[in-house]
Amino acid sequence: MEKSEQEILNIAKGIRLLVLDVDGVLTDGSITFDNEGNELKTFYVRDGYGIKMLIEAGVQVAIITGRYSKIVEKRADELGITEVYQGYQVKSAAYKHLVEKVKISDGEVAYIGDDVVDISLLKKVGLPVAVADATKDTKAEARLITKKSGGRGAVREVCELILKANGKWKPLMNERHKA
Image (cartoon, rainbow, N blue to C red; front, side):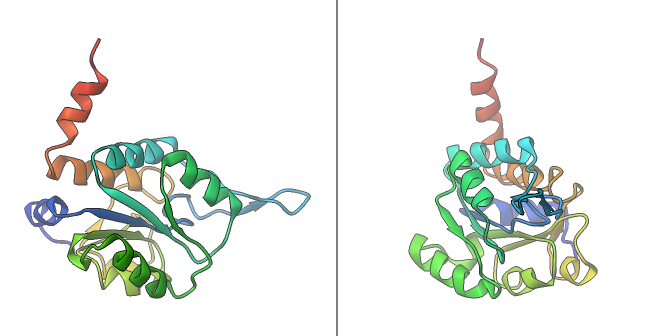
């Protein structure tokens, strides 16, 4: 049920908080263990830079994930994400706490998900987004389906959309291209 590009831009213009799932959104969904049982995840650097630009532009970013991982804490810290909710199989409880804490309405929130555990949040937010390789049921609840897959640029795609809709992309680019 994707909406037209202009409708998406109008919604994105009002986004003040981007909430991210981790496995399948910030990563490609793979979980690797080394011989000592340590969990390994791979994050896409361009997604991270998109998050940093979004935060710099004044849009808050948060993570809500069903699993717990020290790696997620480390990556969030590197990116400047202070609101991190891990171990929430029912993500709506963490979401409710988050929006009350940051005093933002559902309509001002974008959420990116990839699997059925994300559907409850996709139904609540102003801009529900599914990554390109999300499940069919998840995509059915999204207003926007990214062109890129989870862990391979989907987050950056949404960050750029929000920045462009708010007129903040060009100023950020001009700042970065000063000689």
